[in-house]
Length: 148
Image (tube, rainbow, N blue to C red):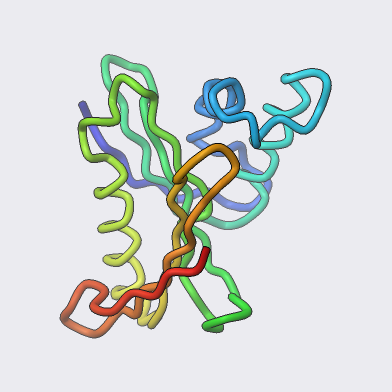
């Protein structure tokens, strides 16, 4: 398996777009329309909306996981690097790709001099925890604060 770190500009199709269909089919909270194709289009559009950094895991030519990182102005912490979206195919969830995504988020925040990062974790159907971490120079994200 290869993991690529890519840059995407607002309006360009996201490299993680191929994961929208399995995500919509797996997670009922992503369904907002009668036709799942409309939901897939909405997810792909949201992934492509901002300038972003993307992490894409590829196995035998198939995208098996991915994450989208964007700069955000968060109402709680101000400027923040955010893991806007992540999805890993079920067969690859034991590969710790989610941990890799968060580590990369922290690394990019450190490089950019951004003090805070945030990301969500799905804990059930339609239920997510939101985690904020402060990035200290030379340390990867000591101190966390969760918000449900």
